[in-house]
Image (cartoon, rainbow, N blue to C red):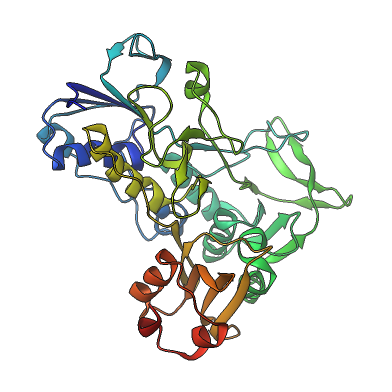
Length: 407
């Protein structure tokens, strides 16, 4: 495969910006154009629900320094959205009337927050958290709010709950699930996060859905739950997950997977010639799992962006990284790596759940599918090896043996 003269990247988030940087780091000398809707240069998302929201910092972690793109001859166009892709003509059209021909195309359009299809969902002041502007606005609101309702007990919901408590807000978290993060971590680990937040004053309304957001033209004022009860609030945040932004890809005729992502092979190539996908939208065939996998976390966007840069210029390497994410809530920090199925995999805990110092493992037919370390930081390399190698071990070995020796 000959080296392309011009590569267009649609999406200036972490995946797109990492790909652009990766191209230059690999010595690619052709044209690189990056189109991004946001006015800000590319940044990483984790600080938006952590350091920025807590007030510990005013800026996110920028993917690269401000001058990097100019110095490396990357044509970064902030505030310019791609509006249409014509695969046959190898053309991308943008919101400013521009037309951009490509030899290779990377789609890295990311995700947007999901909404709830209930009355009042369009009331002014109903918050979501996805962008830097969202985070700065939400932080300003938290500084003034007394009563905060968070709809959603997932990663964003629980991290925002911790930030809201730091701002001395009364916090109520609403979700249909029976425990925070339960669909991902299972009931036993979910209880650790439930008790952590309860100890910091968070009120849970679990097992109840949202029937309506209440308020008037002046803004949202509360939530009516499916059990008929009503909760008043100064601030309401909806954190019920994100949806991959695949409208451009779908309109262009690319195949969309059952989970809503853009279908790609192990090398992140779509079925369209010279078109690739990375980050939140990429439903790529993962050789380790033998199926399509789509991951919405920070590390996946960063690593896939860097990896796909090589394939854009002629390499043909599969993306093999295991999913990874981390969270910091109050005095709890944790890292999760791998891909567990909590309905079928066996949970093994090493350490003390009550003290919130432990490592959790998930096993399928004796093989390690995932590992999560909570407030324990010495075994990261061993956990990576156990997960990446799908190592065969016994539960007793995981509880008592030296993890490095198992890896």
